[in-house]
Picture 1 (cartoon, rainbow, N blue to C red):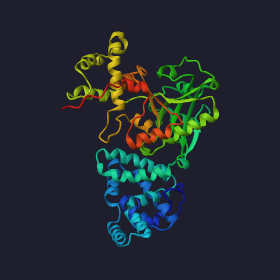
Picture 2: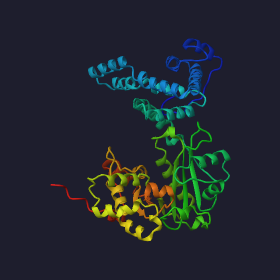
Picture 3: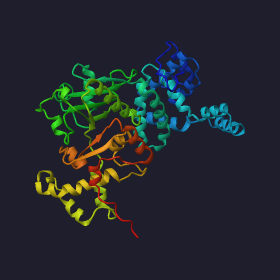
Picture 4: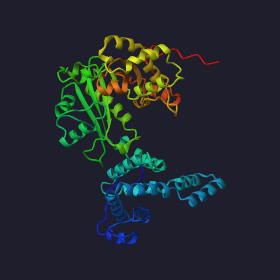
Length: 445
């Protein structure tokens, strides 16, 4: 049996599938739920691996509707064994010993988790399970009851894809073409438009790209980060990506800029790969280039315009004044970035709005609204700077009002900042960002 914190196994047993299939249904059209029950009852490792392979192959051959039907059965029929759990609860109440506590913990585990472990015995099982979770996440939009099954996938993946099993690799022009093609396809922040564009991002002396890989997903990057080496903290993305820019010597750089972080596997959503990646890349760069002193991001704020639109529509906004609303009328005109007068009038209002969005606005769970902010702040970064017209691309204007922000990774402060955010929800920000925030409105009496 594969342990939760052990590398996935890949054993298999030939010649067993025919006999096993006769036990669970028609050989050409096995019932997935019955296959799952049979796999949970199987004790032999080799026969279990063969049955796991058959179940995964059968699942892959099904229509979307049939897959969802099976996933719903996982959610509804493969939870904890209730009778066993109630007996364990009674024993623990009668005698709260360590042994009974362990037994209670085991009884409370959903059967889905053991099923997923056994499916992982099949050759290629890890990758197929990642794809299965993609189906779970997609279907959960319509079937929220699948969230219970998703929690089990995420719980196990957090162990299988922990830092001990991941390999950090530098991506350069000598990397296999298949991996480079995936980097182009998976780039989610700043589109890579061509092979020449990719070369400009990974080949020059002042550029780096690093990715995490897992031994059970060979050739498939899990997450990657693009890095620019610079002499100062950048305020805009266009100069970093310009085709005609002049590279600098890596030895003369004092700043490392993380300007794009892309998750490649939707099935690993929620598994904390990014925090491992940034911290290890910082260590790698410090070893390679001791002259680097500053580690920052140049990050988008993808939820800002949507939030601002909602604030403008809400009559009860606590910080927008009538003058603000009048000024923001120019924001609805598509030519405002090119009109110096409109841009000048909008800048203080939009900057104050962004400060409000980053420092005070919260979602229903009490967290900062912006997902990029949550990621970096939870990693221990400090919100360092708000950059006016940092991204004037169509995407940057439509989602972020042209703003980009810098998050600073100060190695000496990372743990303290993380604790302040994780425990208190406090956003650690530089003084310049705090100054952009308007005074909190007086409470109504």
